[in-house]
Image (tube, rainbow, N blue to C red; front, side, top):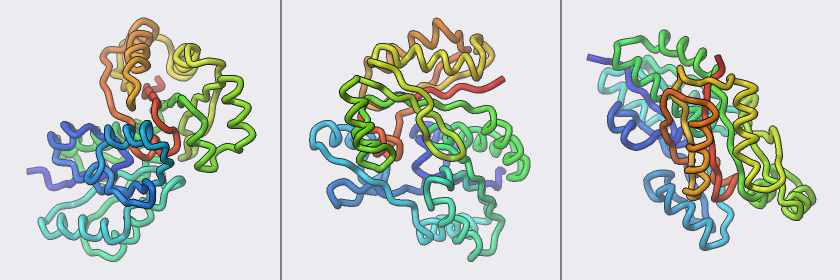
Length: 281
């Protein structure tokens, strides 16, 4: 029997069917909308979150998972005689990882922590791979070695429909946001050094996908027939369908799977965010 419990946080955007299939424990962050707190994925779904952004003109914030949350989760699995591997959202961007490390240090038991230095399904792909390897009977140390290779190969991009949320969150100045909106400039973001950062910008939404594909070809090559790629979506089905079509034609992936971009990225990007995860050779 597998004795290793895989734990992640709600930053990872792992689809619910995979959470259930691999019995993954998800520690929720808190989403704050109009001063009301919601446990991510428990008190509010991703669909409801984007609906609120569209209909209520609100600017959400996220709050890290706490020491107490991790202590309770870790204690539960230690009592069951389990080793624990916690795969975290980027420690550079959130204190959630530090909360887990503090809880680990106050407990006896075999608890391993791994900093993904990523977001959304950049974390999720590591969590699912860890769960697959745990099912095969691999140890936490063996799994972490594999995760390091997969993390270094991962290439994650997001497109943002509006700069309004990045500006409200202090990620860009109001002047830049105003100019960009006047000129209809759409930013493309990647994950670098544990942070989401602008890597390119285009004029007009119709040019976003072609630029994302160009960036992927530059980093990962133009024939991805040996890999499964992942497309992330929020509440913009048209953009998701366009990205699927272009990715199939331009990148020739072995398969395409999907994840819904969650409240962490969504709080900073707003609705209409689209993502794609591919892998360097």
